[in-house]
Image (cartoon, rainbow, N blue to C red):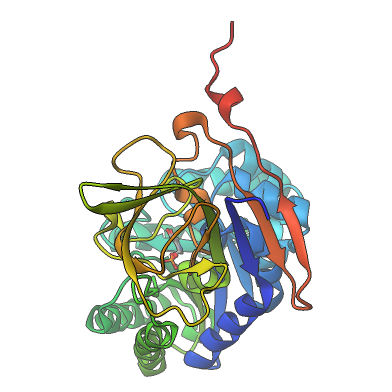
Length: 387
Ligand SMILES: Cc1ncc(COP(=O)(O)O)c(C=O)c1O
């Protein structure tokens, strides 16, 4: 197959979601943050309770794929009022809406009133960044929801960050949330079991461990810590853990072909047809660590490893995918397959840099059938000034 391309494997996605569910208490459900990978949202939505949508574009993707409005959480610091009006006045009135500011509350309330519907909202508590609001502001809005005919306060949304590895911090955070949910219920006359907590746990993915079993064991340790912290919570209401990376990363691979090889001052270089604009691993700046990767065709019985520097096609010294990577002797035409590339790679890359094409995308279904879900897309037209 012509490279570069992404391949997302549905069976692996299903296994990952089942594994995550098994690692958290049974009363806790999952929400897929589709920003991690919009190409698997249909498949993920079959096995998770909710899908988090953060932009008009993501909403349009869900609408065109027929993702149920009942599953959607409309989130994001910037909510387009025109889109909110459209959603609230149609079948998407049943989505959950996060409220991230007083202005967002006002807009949503007005939209709901004009549409004559009552919309479910999750008020977003900030973890000390631009998302959501502080406790005092959250309280003000909870008070405004009380007996409000248009805005139905369902609970709290909280996202402290991605790739989080401190079990201690997660524990503390969930303890604080536990107490806050109790306070809100008490102070504003809700039963805690009626409320919800939507919690973006930021469960990390181990990208730089070559041995898949060791990587999995490290991820499992973090999952177990999250499971324990959730199990310790007193909160009796609904808890939804919102995850992107941990759901999407394991199912994806990114394939790129060696286009040239050379030796410069004793260093081996391979130039590939992809690059860092299409392969984004959290913590991979300047390739100080090596992502999991294998070569095709496989070298049977190859024991000799050489050290290779893998560079992309972007004509910048930053475009390095791996430094001093132990690999069997590389040749032009070999394909490097980078693993755990299912989350954020295809959306966070510098896709327009150097006007290179966007890669093709394939999904392999549970029967092993490969389907192209996006063709190669030329980007130079986007970078061409109009006459
Ligand atoms: C609100 C929210 N939820 C969930 C996520 C997904 O985070 P992760 O990919 O670390 O699971 C993000 C990521 O930015 C987010 O902003």
